[in-house]
Image 1: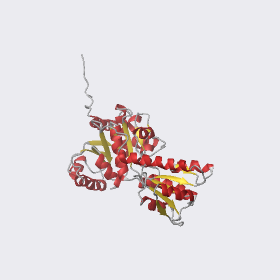
Image 2: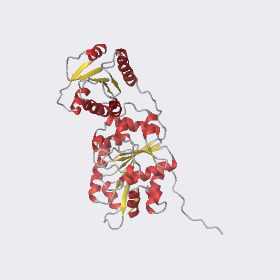
Image 3: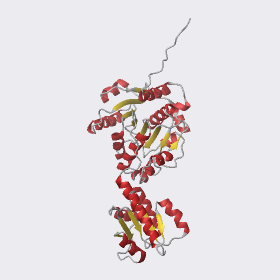
Image 4: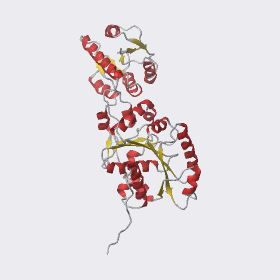
Length: 389
């Protein structure tokens, strides 16, 4: 049975509030007038209710902020406001995430009951199981692009790999930016985000069509889910919700490419657990390679040693003093791809253009294309010349 809680400053409800409490056997969440909306949200969340009725004695600003926080942190609890509010309030109410605003002076009490009963029915449907069953796709690939620290070119590899895949499979490749600290994907592809991974992960119901429609599009045919612009929003991403989103995307698209953040974060662990293969990007620097050693040890601890891995040594030249053979010995595995240093990589990044689009030929493009071919299983191009008499 769906649960209802009434959020108020008093433990003695009167009028319509009292009637609603009786009809729905609502529990009372009595909050202090001096606490912040965030503290209110914590108290409301403890009730684990399906519907929260925000009483008219709460301040308007507190109601709006409380609804916004509940939408992102407790998407399973729908908030409705009770009270006579001005016309300008309704626009703010919609943006905050309130499901409805009910006039407590209205004579139509039955209408109030209908609104809450409707929210109860939605809650029961959510609990009964998924309403949108998406079949598991055969031969689907979820590719996590990893880097031991910032500056190794991880996001550049992720972007160019995703664009290369999208050329081959338009509208069937999605790039997810989970590097929530840097969040470079949108800039590297010159995209002005209208949504982000935090917003979509917090949706109360992950409808496949709604998710697809909210993804950003790139001229290459690539779909993009950018990182949140706010670090606060990024911190609010709940890992069970993120896991659910990544699994849905893996059912919707042939290729899911995930640009991960450096360091040991919860999002990284979630990504590792959903990925079918890793692209590990590093540079010939001892400090980064030492960190990468710990990464690869963590793969074994998480039981991921059998996941397909490609080691990419980026920014290689004769000046680093560290050879590919030394890197292989240090990491106890050979390097799969060597990307040479090229100042045009940064130039393309500054212009917001994928490198493989800006420079169709050259050593870097050849390696990036080889990485994509490895993922798709395509044979290497035949570059031998044939001479005819």
